[in-house]
Image (cartoon, rainbow, N blue to C red; front, side, top):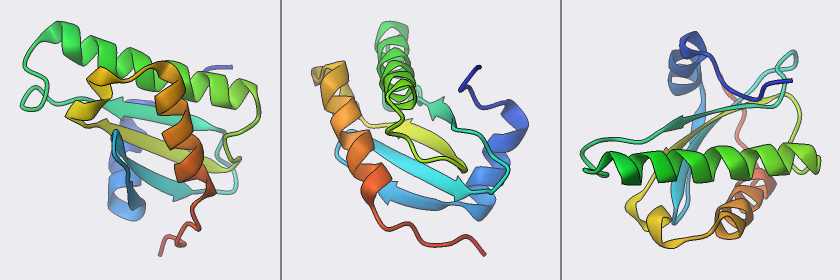
Length: 112
């Protein structure tokens, strides 16, 4: 089962979801009963000038989410979009996982 978010869902999450700001990422989340555990990643060229840095940030976020889904630490019925911050380049996957767990544990406001 893939945990990747398809392109059409990004707009839905940004329109109806809520942001959670962290040190390494900003996460937008949307609660949907029929949703599987899915996540998308966004890495801007303005923040990460080099393609190598953009790719590393994407790999870190995808792998951290994949491991959390495997361990059943990611909440069910949620769609996530993670936006990388520059600080993510100095971190390991375990650091990103720790921040994502913190984001998952936050009391999430309901979408309208």
